[in-house]
Image (cartoon, rainbow, N blue to C red):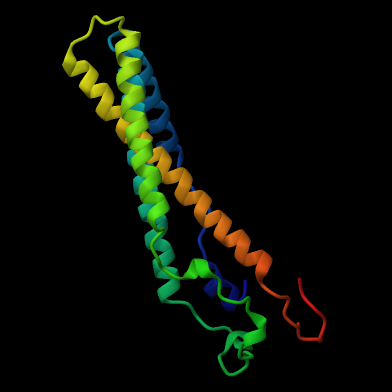
Length: 189
């Protein structure tokens, strides 16, 4: 094995590896969780499994991120990667800057749509709560239905109109941009 390949191997992200002891500990933890099924509800077991999986994914992501940061900080330049040998990029090598790269507000249409979504969600939620309970619920339950459906209606309207506005703006810009000349003089589309 030559020393250069050893340097490249130490600066790469390796696939995850574990030992037999780790595998046996995981199998034991799964067996213990399934044994708790005699005393706990299935929802509680699912919550414990979800919590354990969330902790595992957080720790794994932290380890991978730390390793990637270490690799990025100590990157060795290869001979063909030296700055003097790299060609400087030309402006025609890049796509033109789009309007999506600029930060700007979505405008009044999103505010109006969110207001309509909040209002229609609140009215619909209140009526649905009253109708579904056949008039047997109190005013507090109907108020909770109004607030909950109002929030959901506002969020749905904001997401729908905001996404549609950005999508149509990007499509409009893509269709209205004239073709530019490529490096060989041909027209790009």
